[in-house]
Length: 92
Image (tube, rainbow, N blue to C red; front, side):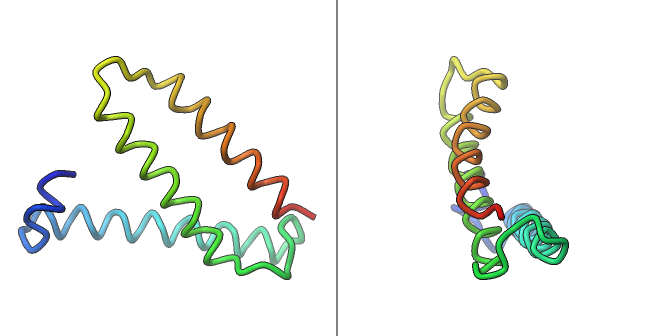
């Protein structure tokens, strides 16, 4: 992560950025598909919600790797707790 921000034009920085973009696009596509099948409200901006989900999870991951005592189960629980609120808000 540090290389991608300090040397964004390096091969590693470009690859990391491409992965972030691909993950963002996957989540955007998921939300839009859930809208198509009627599981997510049609009156919301699906792509923006996908971006919001990615950005939040990415920040949580950054905070996770900065901590020496970070635990995967705790990260997963925090992600579920925050995403649960969003799921309720966008669901039909």
